[in-house]
Image (spheres, rainbow, N blue to C red):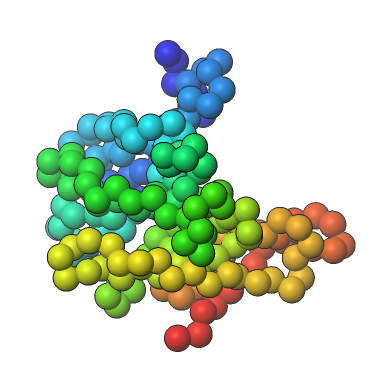
Length: 191
């Protein structure tokens, strides 16, 4: 089909991640990986509605090891947060992990951004339950540890509150205030 609505969401090192839809095919969304150095596109093959919103380069400049964040339909047909490793040298996507808010399957969850923190990652998540900080350790065997969730409570929000990106311990998003309209916010997690 014809590709439409292509959106690059995040970039780090030599890799760009994002999503695309196929024209005239609702629900055809899928994630892609673009290697700036080689000019190669790679389509994510993880099932329906896979998205990539964030990327983190592990090991610093020159490393080909990355961690990807986004979402996809898990085995239960519910959208779950997606965390996976990517090797830019080989194109391999490994350690594909589905995560749901507060470790409770059945809550729609999507990762919007990722940042490296000592010992692991901090992620921005938007869920049916609202916005959240997520911390995931990197284990000694290279795998992902259990997710620790913290709701990003915004007392000014009436209804929608999202988490759209994260850097270190600063989460940014948008919310609907009581006065109508849409406002942005930044929430800082005290360490």
